[in-house]
Amino acid sequence: EDQVTQSPEALRLQEGESSSLNCSYTVSGLRGLFWYRQDPGKGPEFLFTLYSAGEEKEKERLKATLTKKESFLHITAPKPEDSATYLCAVPPPGHYGGSQGNLIFGKGTKLSVKP
Amino acid sequence: NAGVTQTPKFQVLKTGQSMTLQCAQDMNHNSMYWYRQDPGMGLRLIYYSASEGTTDKGEVPNGYNVSRLNKREFSLRLESAAPSQTSVYFCASSVRSNQPQHFGDGTRLSIL
View: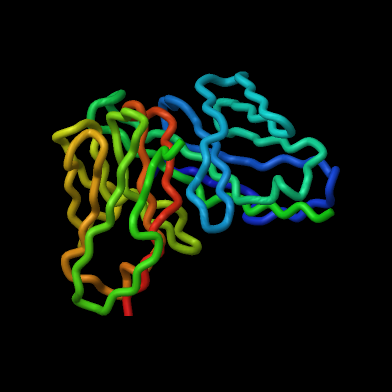
């Protein structure tokens, strides 16, 4: 069964303490991996798309990387405002476009950054 | 920048009542989606519409119906609400299938 697994479930960091979040997937024929940020009481906010192994994307203190089996979201010198739940998602295998429009989401990593 | 707008934001229903959740997007996106989010379960797809005039079942469609009213609007209907449908419901849209999805801020629904 295709699956997206995120670890750890929760991560507590001190301000400035860098770390990484993991997203592993078993979907065959990956056609993109998406990272989202979700704040309490809000909908997920799109961060990055990665399409091929070796690809990297950066935004402020966040850098996403992709291998053939997993993706990492590296957080460098985090600040309290980086506290949120981070979700990753992949499209299921099947026909590109057409009726295969949904995403398979991981359960997320809840990040807390203390000042 | 409205993006994806969901109404209402909160709702309490009694078991057996019916209700329609509304969603509208102003980004000229072709594809629209309805998810539910429950603690420990993550986001699960209820229904989606790859393009205007089409709808398809997702992972958890039982107890729900949808209508793609036009390109902008995609509604979710609970015909006879059950306590198991207590959840946060999110609507999302994307340019086309398998592209990044943009989410609304959700409808928090409690069924007593």
